Length: 432
Image (cartoon, rainbow, N blue to C red; front, top):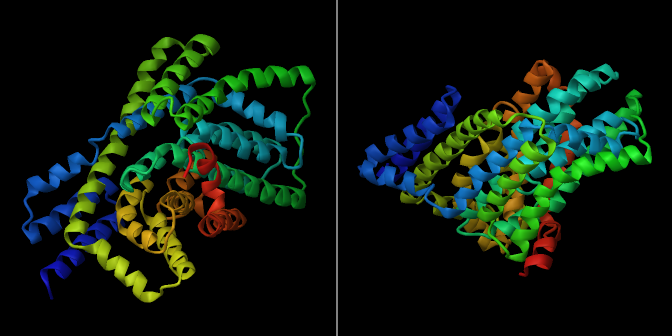
């Protein structure tokens, strides 16, 4: 057996072995990379240099700013105001509070970009309220968990920035715009499923608001939603970059939270900064480790091997896309999102280029698949967070989640086979 084959086996055996032993993903990536590097006699300094280079990018500065903006708005009363706006629009329909949950997650995802933060913020408020109104707890958790996964797809999402860099400089602005329609399709599909279940189980409607109440709710809620407007308008017009837009959004969220709504004291900023740094450290550490892992894979020529293997199975574009979707869905169930994007993008992009798929469309296809992984055992972070917030065993939660999976899978197939869903808005506003 060649040294390349042994190195490949060693790399993946150590990595997946440590994953199944529940070692954190960052350490699993580093340990497997070093093990393969030692065997192949690759200079260890070169591996660590590659890991460092993985986060030496101006575009990555957008990630801490987006994380900080989301933490600031999540700490204040923005979440409550977004829930009220959602209640104003959809609360009066059948299964009103469940519909509110989904729409509020759509709004919150456009601000925070974090599915886990969405579950904690929206879920801790709405799951108890839904249960008091007669909703089953497992249903409430399922709605919260699946709708929170929109945060990966609704712009702005730091995962879109990671993909744009992993794909070799794809436009972040186009990635942001490409997520609008798929994100709304998931929201609409989840609302439809929720309506059908709510009607069958006779869940209650919410209250209707007066005109004056509606004006007051919208006035407060729009201030929070302006964050997404600032980001998208600036990036699509070329007035500023994604990194600059993230910094502006950060300043705006600080002003709105501390000086307009003034619902938390300025000293709370210290706790917000600590949480942001902790989150940022985890994100950048895993990206750095994944870059080292990718470099060893490139050294072993694994991307070329996978490309040849997939093209050897079939030269039919539709068959290859189904295989790639299955591959991403399986990996999404056992790995975190950021390292998966960094690792799989350079592996699959040559195949995508061979079959003539636009990288932007591929990016949305990947994110939609990984969004399902976020709410799928055994490693789905959003699913774990939802079960913890809802105080329910995962086994009970899984019994009724299948209809929600069906909706998300349907959107994956639409994004995969209908390019216009993800490409129309970017092409209209930013050109081909």
